[in-house]
Image (cartoon, rainbow, N blue to C red):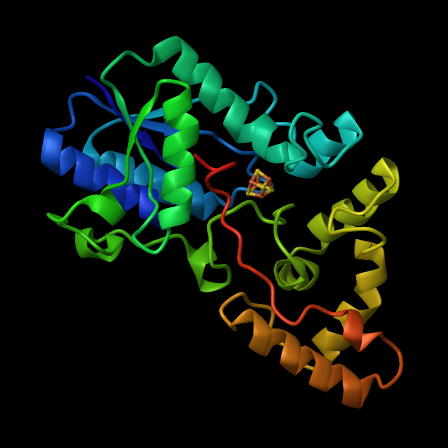
Amino acid sequence: MKHIIAYSGGHSSALVAIEVCRKFGKENVILLNHDINPKVEPADVKRFKQEVADYIGVPITYANHPDWEAETPISLCVKAGTWVNPANRTILCTNRLKTAPFYDWLAENYNDGDVVYYGFDSNEPARITRRSSIMGSSGYKTDYPLALWTDRTIHNIEEIGIARPTAYSLFNHANCIGCLKAGWQHWYIIYCNYPDVYQQLIDGEEAIGYAVHGVDDWAEDKSEMFESMKRAGIEPTEKTPSSQFWARAKKALATQAAGQFDLFALPTAEKSVECTGDCKL
Ligand code: SF4
C-alpha cells in the first residue's frame, strides 16, 4: 500500500507529508509534485519542498508537464490560444501543468488500497467532499490528515526548524507568481514586484484576444490605475484582507486621482484562491 502525498510545495501539504510519515513510516510514502518553471515557481518554494523531503528522507517524485522548464502558465495558454480548458472551462494552466500529469501518474502507478493525501484543513469541508467525490469516482481513495486526524503531531513547519517559503510573507498561497486564477489584488503585487510577468499577461491577453479576468477586464487597462495606487502608497500584499485593501485603494484614488478611474468597477472583495483542488494536487 502506497501513501501518496499531494505534495504541492505549500505549507499544508508539507505538514501532511510529515504526519503520514510519522504515522505509517516513510517506506511506502511518495511525495508527488509537479515541478514548475523557475520563472514562476520561486526558488524558495523549491528550497522548501526539498528541505522537507530531506527531513523526511524520501525523494520527491515528479510528474511534470514535458516542457515545464520552458513553458509558464501564460506561455502555455498563449500557445493554446485560450485561457481556459475547453473541456470544462477551468483555467488551462491548471490542467496542463498539474492535473493532467497528476492523473497520468495515477493511471500508471496507483494500485488498489493506495491512498492519496491532501492538505485541506477542517475549514474546507466543501473542498474535501468535492475532492473525495471526484477521486472516488475514478477509484482513488483519499484522506485529509489536517482536517480529519485527531492525533496530529505538527502544526507549523518551524517546529522542525524549516522556514516556510518567503512567498507567504506577501501571498496567502505558494501559487505561481502571477496566478491566472487570482484576482486583481494578487495582480497588483505582480504589477509592483514582477513587472515582467505583468507585461506577459498584457501581451498574452492581446495575443489570445480576450481578458483572463472577465469580459473587457484587461490587464493593460489596470496598469495606469495600479501606477496611481503605487504612487499613493497602497501596499502590494495579500496580507491585507481584500475588502480593506480595496477600500484603501478607492479612498486613495478618490483623493489623488479624482475622476480618472471608475472606482465603482473595482472589486469590493476578492476571494483568495489557492491552486488546489482543481489545480494544485
Ligand atoms: S498556481 Fe495559478 S498560474 Fe499556476 S498553475 Fe495554478 S492556476 Fe495556473
